[in-house]
Image 1: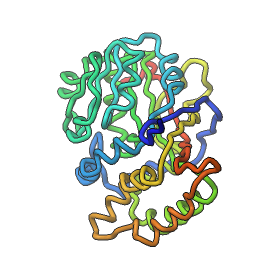
Image 2 (image 1 turned 120 degrees about the vertical axis):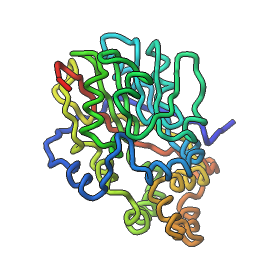
Image 3 (image 1 turned 180 degrees about the vertical axis):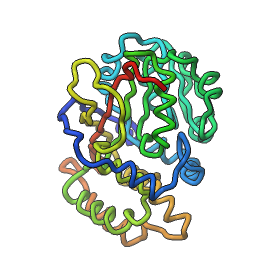
Amino acid sequence: MRNSRKAGFVYGVAMLFDSGSKSLTEAYSAMSGTKSVLMSGDMADLFVKQAKQYADSRPNYPPHLFTFIASKTPSHQLAWDVGTGSGQAAQSLAEIYEKVIGTDSSEKQLELAAKLPNVRYEHTPSPMSTWDLQHKVGPEGSVDLVTVAQALHWFDLPTFYEQVKWVLKKPHGVIAAWCYNVPRVSPSVDSVFDEFYAVELTPYWDPARLLVENNYRSIEFPFEAVEGAQHTGPFEFVTEREMGLEDYLTYIRSGSAYQTAKEKGVELLREDVVHRFKSAWGEDEHGSHFKIATFPVYLRIGKVGHAST
């Protein structure tokens, strides 16, 4: 029986990108004014309001992503998943690491996280203090892996990286951060979406979205290449999710741009827009209304080395 909320996967390290393009981090900082280790209060509020939609409609991450990351950490005792949300990444890490701590500033998101015996979820303030870090995550040099899934672009990076360098084991502790970009479904659906994205969504994106559109190529990432790699990425993976049209529209509604527009009294998925998506969606050759949405995933990964905080 088909279930549009369950994901199927294809995965693999497909490409390596050079990271020589000009950083967008300064532009983001100047435009957004975000000074939190996690995210600004306004942005955090947006994710609270769409917590269930976000958890229900977002893709899971490919298993090979986690085995690749884990292969770069010499020990698998403790992983810290920052901005864990509903715990998608934390649950996958729990299959590899003895203990996982997932932290988030959104209690609503954490309420939706699956409970596992070796995962502890912590509601943390924004920003976190060193005391919070020590008492909710661990002491200096205690963590094997820090992960950030689809959230690094919201962070105050200098402050966050200082804490990462403090808490990771030296010299081989690893930080892995990834984002995924817009899904590809079919030529007809993608055509409608691309126009909708450019005309309707773009005016409401936070400037941090530029870093995702750039596939994290230009995000500040002051770490050393892990063993066996020539640079810190981005490395490309792929994940797939089976979706019906309503799942797809829920995915759009769960985005921060849609939520920002809604806060301003603007409904982006108007009747005429939904009609265009319905016409493009149609049925496949088997008469099914379900389609496979393919999401590219971009990973930055590095080790702490002997960095001082």
